[in-house]
Length: 114
Image (tube, rainbow, N blue to C red):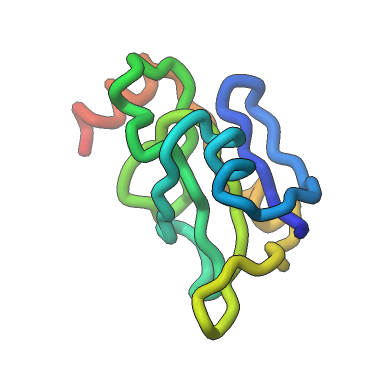
């Protein structure tokens, strides 16, 4: 299944194939998954680590139009009408234009101004 992976540590955004299983999603984000839709279209979601802020994160990303920085990595997929996982159909360039990477210092500055 086509997915877009956001790697906050290495500041990369790549397209890859995953099996879409819970185990693979948790492995990519490094823990329990939580979907966010901020900054994406109505058909896609990005899984992030639900407990990502508990581990003293140093690497973040944020979607343009998003409501807050997200800790760690993300994986973007879409959904079927039944709510099942489906391949991501977004263009890599579209996602790349909408993601900003941040370190902890930048996130703290963002928090002070928002």
